[in-house]
Image 1 (cartoon, rainbow, N blue to C red):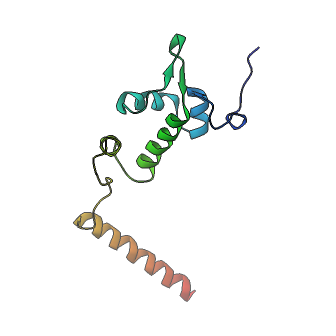
Image 2: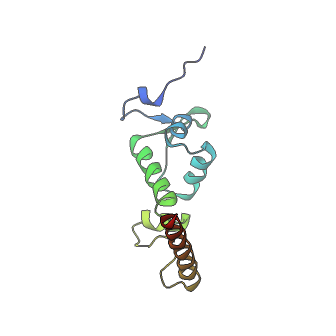
Image 3: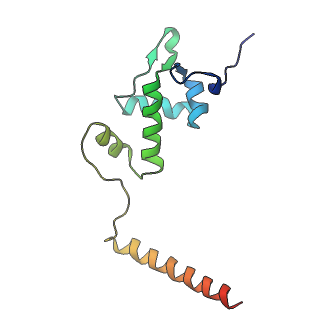
Length: 121
């Protein structure tokens, strides 16, 4: 009989298995394994049978990488450079990009028109 441990029942200082980290962060296990190949800073302990155990600092690093990729707009290479100490800007389109600026102006104009229509109704 196997006992399923809930991540919330564990202390913050406890090691996490890849399954527990996956549930805690919402990231699939294959993504976590892929990140281990891309980010040398992410090195969980590996025991018999290649079972991974993530230390609290590994958990914090995974959350930081996820935030940089999903929220800050970094690419994998950008996160690699940022973690290596090199200054790099997120891969967000610049305001000087003509196509992006035109698209933003078009969306903004349609929103203004929709608000004006709604206000007059």
